[in-house]
Image 1: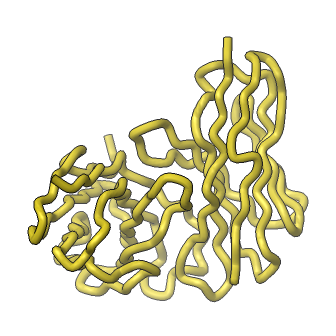
Image 2: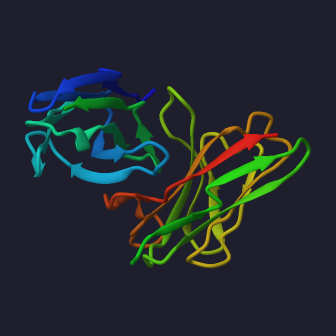
Image 3: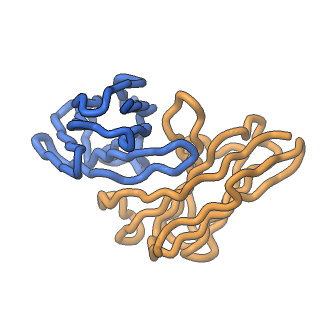
Amino acid sequence: EDQVTQSPEALRLQEGESSSLNCSYTVSGLRGLFWYRQDPGKGPEFLFTLYSAGEEKEKERLKATLTKKESFLHITAPKPEDSATYLCAVHYTGFQKLVFGTGTRLLVSP
Amino acid sequence: DGGITQSPKYLFRKEGQNVTLSCEQNLNHDAMYWYRQDPGQGLRLIYYSQIVNDFQKGDIAEGYSVSREKKESFPLTVTSAQKNPTAFYLCASRKSMGQGSWNSNQPQHFGDGTRLSIL
């Protein structure tokens, strides 16, 4: 069964302390990998789409990378406003749906 | 501004009652989706529709029903047959190329959800 696993489940950082979130997926024909940010009580907000191994996308303090088995969301010098749950979703070839991970809850303390 | 509007934000259901969650989008997207989000679980697909007057069951369709009479609207009814309806419900839409459009990798965009609880 195609699965998406995110780690860690929760991450606490000090402001300015860079780190990475992981999203690993079973190898079964990746068509696209999506990163979203979700604030409490809100819907997920789209961040990035990655299509092929070696691809990178950046937005402000966030940088997403993709290999053949996993994706990383690197957060450089985070600020408290980066606190949120970050979701990863994968679109597999032949499947008419996205498979979502359970998310990483990020808390950035001032 | 273009976006996806879900209403109401909070909804309470009595036993034996059907309730309907509204989802409206003005993004001119063809495809629309309903997800359920429970603590500690990933989003699970309930129903999706790629075109008006057509929809398909997702992974957890039992106890739910939908309609797609207009491009802009995709209401979800939680029926009394759904025994564990307490959850956060999310509607999404996506720009697509028409039927069979899952080869497109346009991202899904989400509304701000409806939280359903049992009275």
